[in-house]
Structures are given as structure tokens and as C-alpha cells.
Length: 255
Image 1 (cartoon, rainbow, N blue to C red):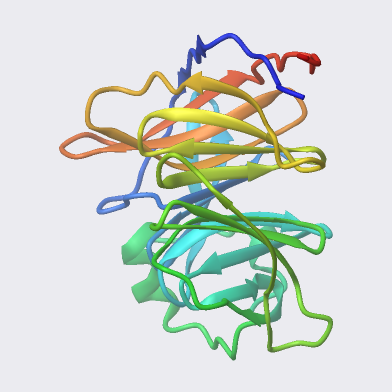
Image 2 (cartoon, helix red, strand yellow; image 1 turned 180 degrees about the vertical axis):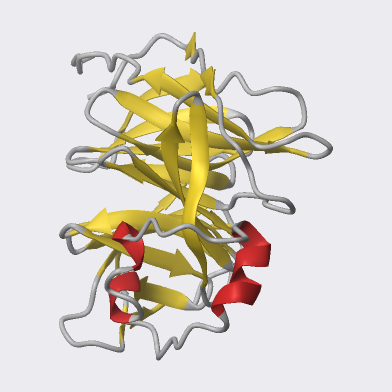
């Protein structure tokens, strides 16, 4: 059985966004009209304000370098090189708070002071450098610099380790990914987007990511109709981009 697909190029539309100073995103999640963006060890909330997404509320300092933000059971979780963390365990009201702050982004952390983070809800297995991550329900996907994707299961007890269930090699390092109910969307440093079936592990389709020269997509999220990504490029402001989900081909059997 072979999955046939026609190579196509994804067309991204830029969404206006106001980025805090020194803010270089490393992960993103979008839910209920609110955008959560991580930049290394900082997470900032954004909301649509008249003509653009703008930062709101206090930024939060997080352990390690964030490589994944996901909504799990209605709660925001963070996956960094330090482990898997449930943000509500640190501050249950942070995700919904939009109180004004004199400083946002990196400078907002100076106003807030250090957060009280305990041990992660789950530690990472032994892997090469974490390059991207995502979660859905009890499943966690980890991408590493050795061009591997690992499907993991969250431990039943707190402070356990993510259990690796499946390893899948890729043709390049994954820099951003998104999990939905049946498909894993992965963006590679080689400027490709892969749609991988979560049921079979087969590649359903492969697309040209159509990124600017020298650019990398470092975060991928979405809703029911669109993929939303963040692109970084040295010497330029980050770009928040959006595109309708690419159409996936039907599977055909070749004898």
C-alpha cells in the first residue's frame, strides 16, 4: 500500500502581531481567540486588539527552553528540555488573566519575579537535543535533532517519565509540529511540511513549506480550519502566519 500525493506549495498569509522587545519565539498555541507564544524561557499571552495580536497580561518565566505548547484536557501544558509541565500547577489563573502590565515579554518577567516551579509532571526520555514537541490527550510527540520523532505516553503517576511507544525517522530535523485527532503535521528544517497518519505512521502527504530564504518555522498550531505558524529569520521580526489546512489525498492501493 502506497500513499500517493502531489507535491504542492503552501501559501501563508501574514497576520499582524506586536512582538515584545528581544522576543524570539520557540513555540506557539492558539485557543479560543487567545495566542500563547514561548520565547526560550518566557511565555507571553496575546489577544486580537483592533488590528493585530498584542501582548496582554504578565509574562511567565518557565524552566528550560520551551519547544512545545499544547492544550491538554482544556489546560495549557509546556514541553521544554526540562520536561513536561502543567502550567496551572504553578498559577491556575495565569492563562485567563489579562490584567495590564507595565512590561511584557522578557522585561515583564522582571516585574513578576521568579515563578515557583516544582519538578516536571513528567520527565523526558534520554534523547538528543529537543527541537519541537506537542501533546494531545495522553499522547506526547517529541522531535529531536537526530531527525527522530518519538510518540510517547504520559505516565500514570506524577513525576514519572514519558514512555516511548514508537520511533519514526524523518528526512530532516523537525522544527515545529502540531497534533490533531488523526494527523501529525511536522515542519522540517529542510523547508518541507509532512502530514503523518497517527493511525498507521504513514506519510499522507508532503508539501513545500514555502518559507523565505533563511527562515525557520519554530511553532505550529491551529484550529478546526487553519494552521497557524510562527516564522523566525535572523535580522527580521518574527512573523505570525496562517493557511487553510492543505487537502490530503485519498489512499490508493498499488499492486
